[in-house]
Image (tube, rainbow, N blue to C red):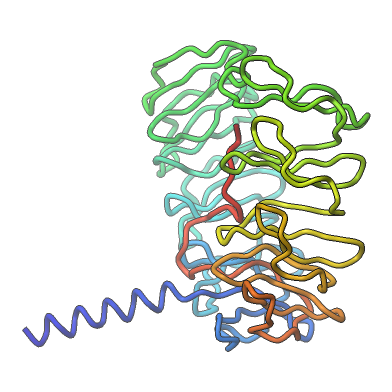
Length: 345
């Protein structure tokens, strides 16, 4: 029984350690990782850092990308032009304008280099052969599983993927069998809202799926829908509307972005940034030179040229002393995730 308890305790400690929240920051010209309590997880000694995804983070040296683990140990040397996030235990890499995939130890999964490629999902990765300029799919060992016959091939989700041949789109399964044919206007028909007009001319509008105009063509840009709300830009000013076209917040802000999971959105008035809620109530005053969105209860904020982290009351919990904040606080072993949750419509 004692050994079982010790094993459980060890697993809990290991789990907590791997779920530690860290953020990449620049301090005195070098990058490192800090924890939410402000202590260093990795001292600043890197030329650049991205955040951890599944326990690995990208770093650049002399313009070349590599990967380190959570201990700061070099797992993949800095010899690539680009390194993507780890997905399905595979990493997309770019070298001399050609793509390949690596495992966590830096071993290539294929002897073939590709014209283009996308991350793995559901055990498949879409790749484009330079021989015929067509897309197909390989498995995690680099074996071609679905022939390169498509003009484009999207990621697999729930064991299904959308592919296109000329102007016709299809849904295929993991064996490449067509299980549905999509009409040319498929993307339009599934959208809750569609755009009309021209962004450059400031004549953008929105119509619903029934073709009814809910916002006339007098706007410059629109955000994606979050629940039933989205931001809009009219003549350089930002406001908020709902999917019925009702103006919830008049265009009075010089900048407005998506709402974080704590219900706050970064906004700008004049040359200062703050945060508002969905009703337009100012929750954190416009007093910062720059800000980032909230993630895991903290947001980056800059005053007098230095960055720190604030809580939802606008109080610095990590004092502004950093030259740069590269990303928000995320778990060491988290999957790749979006900063904000919204609908692609």
